Image 1 (tube, helix red, strand yellow):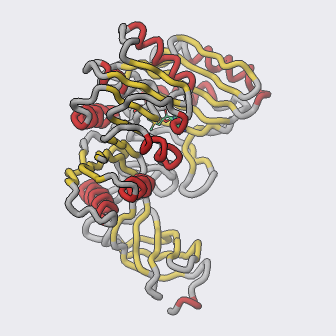
Image 2 (tube, rainbow, N blue to C red):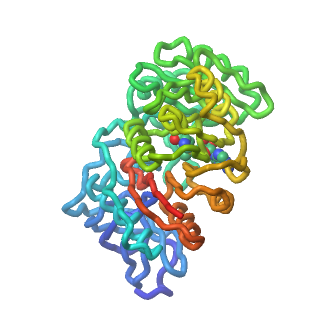
Image 3 (tube, protein in one colour):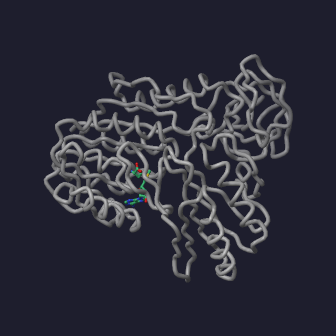
Length: 418
Ligand SMILES: C[S@@+](CC[C@H](N)C(=O)[O-])C[C@H]1O[C@@H](n2cnc3c(N)ncnc32)[C@H](O)[C@@H]1O
């Protein structure tokens, strides 16, 4: 079969070779092009049907799998349908090896072969996820199917940490039948039997009915607080809509960013603190509710913490005041690239997947001689490190964190010095 014979809908067999970060696995088409697929493991022989044709690669769906010798049995009954956890059939050791390899290769590409790449951090707990974002359409609550906006109804999600499975059942009972749609976020309070629900409603017409459902939800013992947001309507909060999370027990509003892997989040904080030893004034960008901020301030380090989410900054201000740390913590409600100037010796940043491209020139202009970069996307991390290397920075340390097992995604910490 040559390239001209391969079109959308063409079928062929191939052997899966390796995982690709992002959740795919990779094989080779009969014409030599790379093929990206989902739902199979290295060593599996699959019948594949082409779904996208590009000059250098193809995408295909798996029609049938002849299992290879190294395949894991998927643990979830929605595997193959639901878009979450596409690496379930890949043994966790192979998953970590793929993360290690990708991170090391992208650093080597930056011509810094002498960088210390520490082994990937991992934890074997299977119900690791302490926060989850579901989709609700009035008739179903679930996750999107892979690469589509088709909703897969989810009653049980085995990776959810307690009490999220119970919260999911309660939310399903109260929301299915209410004629609305949006996203529903569930977050577990660390070490407690309850958590928060946050709904982003997309249909103004169902605002009243959804508020009523929320009122019923907070009467349940496993829901200690809830927030409803809807464009054009006032935000409603009920009960105690925050969770105390992370190593510093920082209050996170139900609507704000929270690390999904709480054990991993604590390991990350320790690693970051270690690499900021000796710092006196840190510019912290993408600070969230203060997961790193209060760990630094607790070590007597001044922190200027920049974050766009106003609810997160509001809680951070109150927390700084109640911990009597206002002399050390300066919360700033602004986009990262508009951080205030200051006498910083170090910069800590933890951007979303899009990375920190916009903020890099500002970071470079500060007098800081050390950058600690926490990333949830190795591709944008590599892009941003390249910019830093081209502008005179050296990479001193890199470590990947397997914070999203079975998803094909990974967190990483990189340390740069001027
Ligand atoms: C990955 S989270 C990290 C939060 C925090 N460091 C933690 O560990 O919980 C990224 C944070 O960046 C914030 N954010 C997104 N875009 C931003 C921007 N342009 N400027 C500042 N903060 C931003 C988000 O609201 C979110 O809180």
